[in-house]
Length: 104
Image: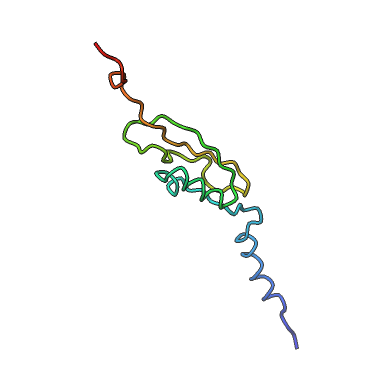
């Protein structure tokens, strides 16, 4: 009539607490999801996630499409309301000889 109640409690509670972190942000920003997108598209998608979006123009190396995303900061896990900066390619600067009115 002896029972051994120690078998069940020792096996179960050891794994569960490590699988469910309580402070994990719900939004993951992956740069590749936005780089190359148009400024408007990237901004719209980030705002839909509840993020604040800032934009800054960056110099166009000459082979990038104007008004497309060059970079996103920050990347990785963020919380709703986080401020995200989109670096947007500016228009390609013309060469001085292309300026109208400059003659001989």
